[in-house]
Length: 305
Image (cartoon, rainbow, N blue to C red; front, side, top):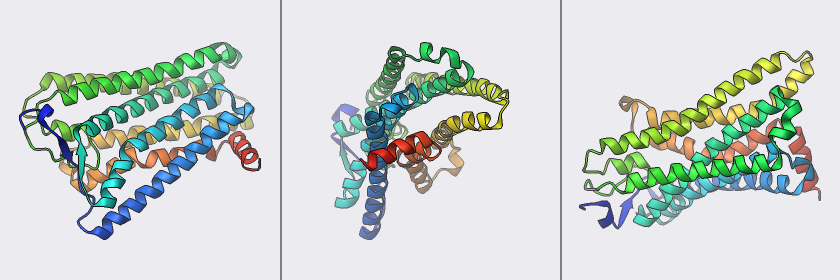
């Protein structure tokens, strides 16, 4: 293969050598996918149907659930298909779509997590200005900006990755099309491309991370000044789910792509990417709703008709 345009497809990592283990992983991925669809579907339906949840916080939570559904639908179905049929192939077009959609949904999710952080900052630190700063038009603009940033982030990564000439075979050592694995197949020393990809990632991830850290410093300072213990507990309870999701998102992503090469191995890389890209969409709905009595009450009303 002289370049990427002559590549008709890629070979993904086989989950296991035996048919029994392949079927076991298929059922495992099916269970995680159903949990993600059920949890995020209930969040979207409950927020859309209950008028009491038509507020900025739940508006952004609905969008976060959409990104979770999108990210798990990008990687898991093809992995389940290959496990069930005992194949490892993916077309070139399918690989391009996987890379673009995964970066699109993950980029939009991180931007939305930053927006939710701003919502909590305004609600706790500037409660008298909440209706002004987070009106319906402002919320729509912030959500649109988050999705647009995810689109641009995905476009930069996809164009830079698939414009590389590939001459090192077509075998990817992961269960989906992961950019570092595709770059390893390149036969050119694309220093400036790697700098561009690193710069795009740093601008989004580091910028959002700094914003979240700065906002929570201000939030904790405001909460500690609340005189009543009940008031402090209520304020913290609205922030803890968001903090938990951000911590999981940042820690698993950082370890997946910045772990030392000395501890890298195919099995460890596989487990880390499963924890990074497959488990969170199923776990996040539980985190969002676990300490949210208002949402649980609305869900109960929806379930009982």
